[in-house]
Image (tube, rainbow, N blue to C red):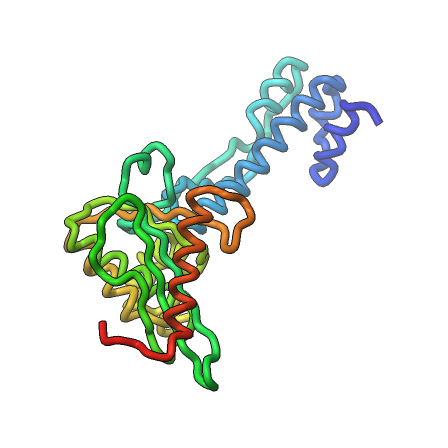
Length: 266
């Protein structure tokens, strides 16, 4: 199969019109290429909208590609009688949020903290712990916490809350939270603004788990005027570097706290 035919076959699900069949192989290949770009642009826009980005969504009837129309004019094709596209432009609402995805340039010199939480059975009971590791910051607070009979998801958000409490005492207005928990990261960045706007109810109209922790974090961040950047790190990574060191230490601390037989009041 030639490259031209391969490109043309990518539009197999969209039958060529009486105008398009008159195009040369080169023109058909160009049309197919533009169609592929447009197709994946729509997929990317949908994914961004689901993540809470402000995305312009267009709905159109009898949509015709500008390239196709231009080629038709070159071939002197009669396009009369074909209705012009009508589009309705809707901008998806963007709820305010102090939590953002990690940006290398914006986060270059910001304070960085690694947080982790865990929960497992210890002496026939579920025990949870949290670990917090600051980078290049002198924090006098304890860096490991026993949380008692709690779930691992509770522990992950509790670790975030503790880090934010420590950041508030140090008057930080910007920081980077590094976590291997997709639950924590996506909850704050993508879901919390909608949960809060909906009275801490999920899209299924059910009460959000650990809502008291999320709201406590939100009060700290809002009152402090804080901006939190979230960096995803890989848990138990085999690649050496600062992210591995920080996350491994936070993991060690939360595991030690959960498994410790004596837990001082903190």
